[in-house]
Length: 268
Image (tube, rainbow, N blue to C red; front, top):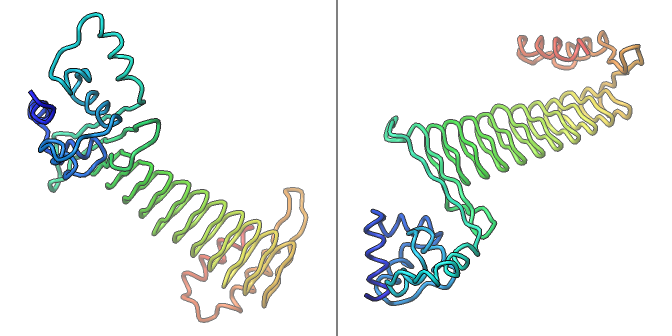
């Protein structure tokens, strides 16, 4: 039996399509098709990975022969050289054709591979897309990951339509080392309303260095400068001056939102 025939046989035994095997291998479907048709052969790393997926030795995979007892230990050593792990789970229950839970995580050669993708209501994967998503790269309504995008996003780099928290965060409300948002809070905060070590805002800025229409800080630049005072609890804003400035400078602002700002900044 040729290698091509053996590969086809093992794939069918596992119930894999060429596309499924290609996804697990991190190669294109065309590559698998060429292996099975004899137009090309996988390299040694892919051969080892194939042997792990089909749970056979390299001899069984290439020659179609089971290893002799004396050769078994040596064969196992060869198979274990690459550090490869993969786990996938899909729940039986679906909503709108999407699994309730899909977990698809793994790595190969000690590195995470982006072709392990999870898509579900709850998705966990190297790349995850779902209502609630957790992954190296995650996209969802509630998103958690090194790179996360969603309505509510938490991650090293987070982009959230409503709330974003991360080392670098951008969103309606952004909290992070570097924060960009309508309301921004961080070491470097930029937005309409910003608070942080360095705060730059179009409306109100509060921070060590503050630059905005209304500014309050150790170093403040703006149309209206609000002083800070030292008290027993630390440095506090002159609340009366802040409230007065908000009412005078934002006369045309929607009244309920202006009152919210007074409540937010007037109590500092």
